[in-house]
Image (cartoon, rainbow, N blue to C red; front, side, top):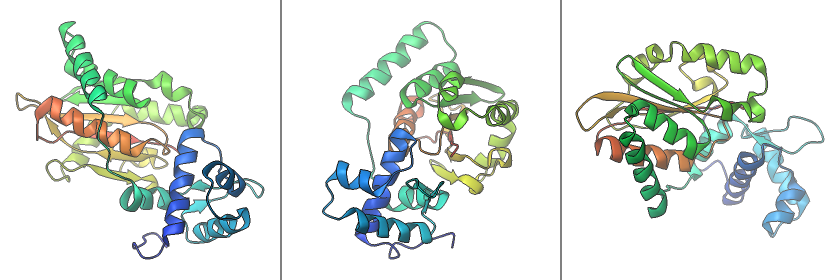
Amino acid sequence: MERYNDHMLTDRQKNLLSVVVKEYTENAIPVGSQHIAKKYGIDLSSATIRAEMNELEEAGFLFQPHTSAGRIPTDAGYRYFVEKIMPDKELSKAEQKKLQAELLKMQAKNMRLTRTTAKLLSGLSGNLAISGVKNEFDDFGMNELMDEPEFREMDDLCRLAETLDYIDEKFDSIVKNLRDNEVKIFIGKENPIKEISNCSMMISPYKTKSGEKGILALIGPKRMKYAKNKSLIEYMKKLLGGTAAVAILFISIH
């Protein structure tokens, strides 16, 4: 099974899936039933939690990398979380003011807008950011990715670096199929950029205040903080062009 409706999981299972996504996002370590019971004080025994996690695994939402290990979310698990569980989030007023101030500071130094937005998004998300208008693209944050356990395999980094060389061509074809102001999330094999099909991607078009079309991107692990990153997209839209669409790409690796 690849897709699931909202009635296939109980509230308890939704809660446990959310906890696994949260824990794995923060620590990149498979999550076990005893850890959940101890940390979250859930009124369930470890055995009951383990049984529910087995159900989630059989349904395709969780995966056990080793027999004695805990579970990690699958692509389907992340998809369900993003569509059915993830709460809407807005940047705090303090975060908004910080973003505005940093943007103005960088512009005062005559930094290119694409370079400025890439640096800001990378710094706030901890992911690799890409920003581009027409044939001008900037990226920032590759060093941050090298610190993530998912990117320690040299093949993954090389494949990502090679993809960045012609990413603008890929974006053009993807953005053409998006509705105005749409934020689209691709996870794993859904990814239209086949060279990084073990990644996730969140993308949406944008226009600057002058009417110029552009694209922004964030690249990081699948366990990225989806809600926070999406709020960054939405607020950057307001800064760059009000209600116009902004293109932000999230690529993540297991």
